[in-house]
Image (cartoon, rainbow, N blue to C red; front, side):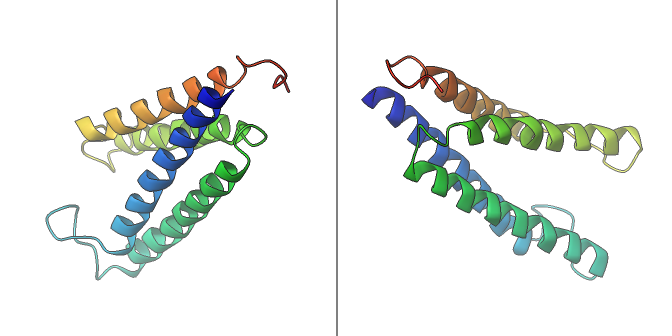
Length: 133
């Protein structure tokens, strides 16, 4: 059972760190790192709105780490609809001509690795006796 809990905790913290990083980048966009729309209030509002949700999900993943087995379902919810939904929204924006390159390499690798980690840790958590819920 110890191995299952360790994998769950690795997954929770990997997600929390990734979300916190993205929230920071959304609140403090760097020139050259992404388009500089700092003067556009709509963009700034959307970024702040998204950052608040990212911080909320960071806290949720840390909270799940406090009771890793009982709250393991959060990992599945993080993949579907969150990660899949974010990827699909990029595809829709690209199809509408509003996003030039929806899937740069890091935009595919990081969510893919996190999704595999989350789903693997979730599935692995059922291997130990007495944790089938």
